[in-house]
Length: 344
Ligand code: 2U9
Image (cartoon, rainbow, N blue to C red; front, side, top):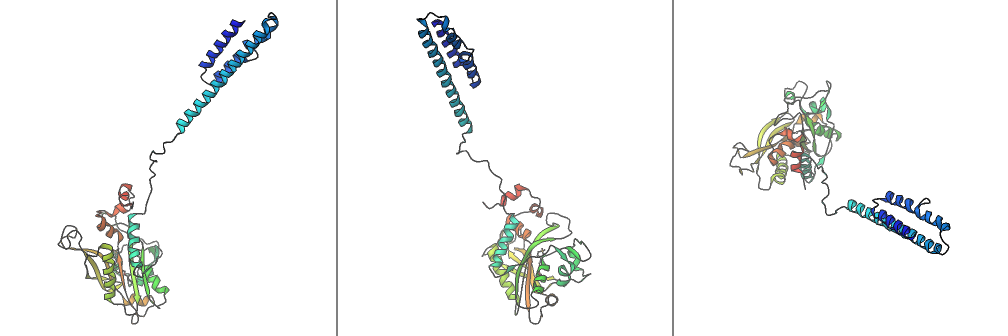
C-alpha cells in the first residue's frame, strides 16, 4: 500500500505540474482527491489492512492527500499570478508613447483675417453691425441709390427669390438699415462683415458666394481727409508701417466722390513686378463720401450730415497676403489647403 501511495503521489504531482489551466487542475483534484479518487479508496480500504498498519497508512494517505492539495493550490496560485502578470503586461500602457494625433480643426483663414480687420476698426471706434443675407430689394439696391432698372444693378447679377427678395449682393444694406435705425440723428460708425452672393460662374477670381467687409461713418462735418486718415491707418496696421497708400478717382452709385485705394507693392517696394503688374501698386478697396441721396433715403439731412464709406473683399486681401491664386480654395474645404493656415 505504501508504494501505491507513493506512486499515486508522484503521478498526481506530475499531473499537477503538467496542468495547463484551472480546469485541468480541477480534473486532477477530482481524479485524485475526489470521493471516487484513489486516495479516498485507500482510506476506505483501511478496514482490510492489518491493525498495526492502519495508523501508518492512514497518516501517509492523509499526508499524500495534503501534499497533493498543497501542490494543487500552489499551482493554482502560480497560474493566477501568471495570468495577472500577463494581463498587466497586456494592459500596461507605455505612457511615454505619443498619443494618437487627434485631427483638430481651427478657424478658417478667412475667419482669422476678417477678425483681424474687425479688430483694427474696433480699435478706431467702429462697431460691428450685421444683417440678413436674404435681403429686400429696397435695402440692397434702392436705398443705395440704385433704383429699379438702374443699369448698375446688372453689374451685381443677383439671386432673386421673389420680385422683392434676393440674396444680398453686398453688405451695404446693413449700413442702410443701421442709418435708418438712427432716425437721422447722431453719428453712425460701423463696419459690416458678412457673406454676399452674386450670380457669377465660379472661376479663379470669382465665386457665387464670397465675403465683404464694408464700413460707414456718418456724422456732422465728415470730410474726405477723415476717410483718407482712416484708410491710411488701416493700411499701415494691416500691411505694414512702411506701406504707402494712394487714392485713385473711381465711381460707385452710393458714394460721391468715389475712390479706390491702392497700397504700395510689397514684392517690389513699388518698383513694379508681376504681382502688381508693373504698376508698383496693389488695389485693396473702394470708398467714397456717402451719396446725398443715400443719406436722405436713410432719413439723414445731407446738409447737416455727411459721411464716408468703404468696401473690401477679404478673399482678395488673403490671396494677396498668402499668394493664393484661386479663390475657390477658400470654399472647397481641402484640408491640405486649410491646414497651411492653422495658427499653431
Ligand atoms: C452705404 C453707403 C455707401 C460701400 C462701398 C465700396 C466702395 C467697394 C467693393 C469692395 C470689394 C465691392 O466686394 S467688392 O468688390 N466695394 O468698393 N463699397 S463704397 O459704400 C456704401 C455702403 C453703404 C449706406
